[in-house]
Structures are given as C-alpha cells and as structure tokens.
Amino acid sequence: QVQLVESGGGLVQAGGSLKLSCGGSGRTFSSFGMAWFRQAPGKEREFVAGISRSGSNTYYADSMKGRFTISRDNAKNTMYLQMNSLKPDDTAVYYCAAFVGTVVPANPQYWGQGTQVTVSS
Image 1 (spheres, rainbow, N blue to C red):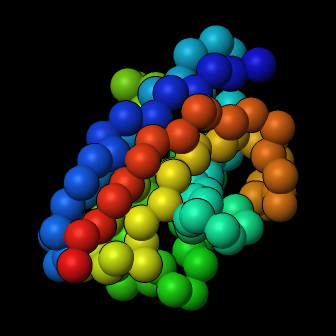
Image 2: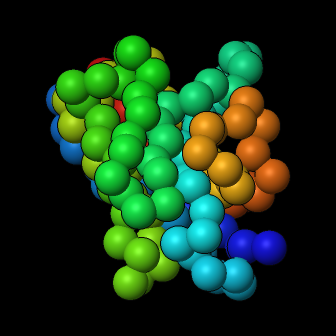
C-alpha cells in the first residue's frame, strides 16, 4: 500500500504556470506507476497524464499534450505535474494516483485527497 498527498495547487491567472507535487509514503514508491486525474465541477473525473515506474514512459490525454508535463523523482518519492499556459477550463481538483502494472487503469487503487487548481480569466 502507498499513501499519497498532493500539494502545489492554488490560484493562477490564465496563461500562467503551476507545478503540482504528489508525495508518496508506505511501500516502495518506485514499485508503482503513477498518474494524475482531475475533476471539474459538474463533470466526471478525467485522466490527465500517467508515468511508468521508472519515469521512462509518459502518457497524456490529448487535450493536455503540449501544455502539461508529468515527471517523477523516485529518490524523493515524488511525482510532479508541470502545467503551463493554463486556461480557465483547467480549473479542477487534481488527484494523484498509484497503480500496479504497466497500463494506467481507469480507476487506480490508490488515491490522494486532491489539490484545488483555479485558473482565473
């Protein structure tokens, strides 16, 4: 089992940048693939990005490509999401998740509590 805690959310203006962090504890962090999901008000949770255990492979939802970058530092037990050129539509609660395997599941087993990202016009 792994416990996850997100941080770095906040209020930014459109066009700005924000970097989220997800710290892990418990079982070996590098044993898990990691992913970011988000949920906006009135909408279903959606996949944002995923990263393999070593960080060598990354995956993005089409709408995120070119603006968001997922990375991880296993020595620090931390995963990151760098968000650039933010838009008001990016406003959502962002969740980090961990999973076992090589494919990001629709509903990973382990979740953080989420961090609010608000992008103003």
